[in-house]
Image (tube, rainbow, N blue to C red; front, side, top):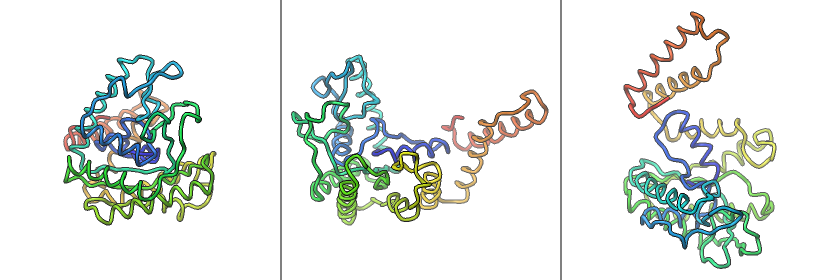
Length: 292
């Protein structure tokens, strides 16, 4: 859960067929918004009409991303509560929970006490913009860790700071934001067990300094950078000769399924398909949940 960096790692996990759930309530950047959401999920506190509002012909919630918004109120609430139930089960059973914090800048609706996960294009004058202090962020992060570990004490929490810069806030403001996040996160980690830091932010800032590692917007890491970080993440968190061999075979299958032959009826292509089928059968015997 967290910023769009989570989604990049999530795509890699999906490609290699790991059992995972990525941002079920959409992209979230601020630690307070993540705390609000995880606390609701773990308390199984259902969404009701008081948690949503109508704007620009759609129903929204300040707790979730706009990609889940809907024109139908009942369907919207039903969908949110279904995702809430699923997320509760997943957090209860997860071997690892990855949290990526994106910014310490938050937008608090004037009529609300909590920082919004998404503003849903509501006019800015209806929000109070604030930079959360290190102390406030420590409380958000500590409450989040404690909530997860209470329901799933054996899980490992992997934390990262998103390398994506929030340039719209300003370069100086972005640096202040990242500094507050880093200081708060490491302070809490020092007194919490089963929590680990993955240096995604540092890898991008210090190892991939050139703009050739960014998308055209010069803000988001591009495929080269994402692949670099994924390779580093694998070495850190995905170990063992058997696992590495499994990932190698899955990669061969995925590339084979994406292959576009010149002659679909040719003998060479039929042999190729048979080879892929055998590899799929081998993998699915070991891991029955994998579907290609």
